[in-house]
Amino acid sequence: MKKSILITGGAGFIGSHVVRLFVNKYPKYKIVNLDNLTYAGNLENLIDIESKENYKFLKADINNPSLIDEIFNEFQFEGVIHLAAESHVDRSISNPMEFIYTNVVGTVNLLNSSKRIWKDNYNNKLFYHISTDEVYGSIEDGGYFTEETPYEPRSPYSASKASSDHFVRAYFNTYKLPVVISNCSNNYGPNQFPEKLIPLAINNIKNNKSIPVYGKGENIRDWLYVEDHANAIDVIFHKGKTGETYNIGGNNEWKNIDLIKKLCEIMDEKLGRKAGASGKLITFVKDRAGHDLRYAIDSGKLMKALKWQPSCNFEEGLAKTVEWYLTNEKWLNNVITGDYEKYYDNQYIKR
Ligand code: NAD
Ligand code: TYD
Image 1 (tube, rainbow, N blue to C red):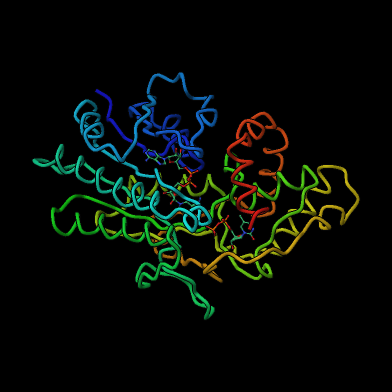
Image 2 (image 1 turned 90 degrees about the horizontal axis):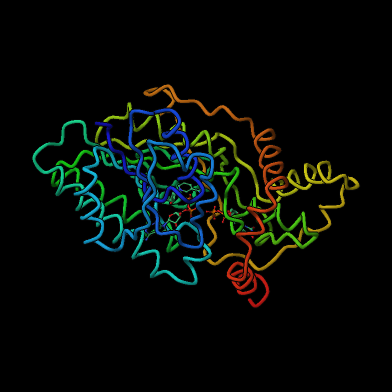
């Protein structure tokens, strides 16, 4: 029998890259992708692997504990890689409750189902929780987040992720549930929903719409190509030490305004526009409430202990990402339907 692995949130941005990697690399695993297809979940992300024999999709809500229990009973998962979440800070500011239900309660539902089916035998079992560097707060003294940095979440999104991390550690400590956690920096790449900075800017530049830069564009993020994150998840899932936390980052800090200018240069070239044309679309808008100034990750532990390295250089990664959005117009047009327009108007036009 194949080893059965549950990946939650596999129809989303990062999850779809993780599902693809595992389905292709591990034919001896049965990969079950559980996702309830919120606005951010999109099965088009997985068209290339959907008919593979070792892949199965289940539409289910992690907020439905009895359904989750039934699914765990049926598939007897040996590993869980948990990515399902509400993931956008701006949405968490306007609607925090969704984040508490999915990110906190949903995670605890999965912990409970794992504990229940594994109760007599934790051998070769693992609950791997995917988290974010945002749980550490904003680092403004030039230092880096390490695995020992105290948690100081400052947005409803990061507070919900921090809370879920605490529950995962509490289940390790209290029930000895075998867990591992990783906290990653900002991802970019194909299939990211265009509410996040890079795909939103690509879409706007393409359509000659203004590029909204919050505040003065001075905020700093550490960007990692999504396939590098998926590879780190593979390494941690197979070689990580139970009970440990690993930080994942690209060692690639950019001020938002510099990143947007770089993106404009790449887009001018790809679209055959005059140098500087896209840059004219940059528009400074009202800052995000409680906007964290800087995230910066020290991934030394992961690099040393598990020999992981990011492999994608940022300029190449950005160029590949732009190319992907320009050649996958159908994907983009399908996701920017009525709901996206409503979200965009509320977020950028009406405020
Ligand atoms: P995403 O928003 O693109 O995808 C989330 C997926 O979860 C979607 O497919 C959605 O349908 C699914 N989902 C949401 N609520 C659900 C529910 N109640 N039941 C079942 N499925 C549900 O998110 P992403 O950017 O791919 O992030 C994935 C994970 O990685 C999240 O846990 C996020 O916190 C974490 N993370 C993201 C980043 C980043 O830069 N995007 C960085 C570090 C960590
Ligand atoms: P985002 O992609 O939302 O990721 P996060 O908030 O999780 O880091 O935003 C990245 C940075 O870009 C963040 O500093 C907020 C900023 N930003 C803008 O300036 N304009 C925008 O329209 C968006 C969506 C983000």
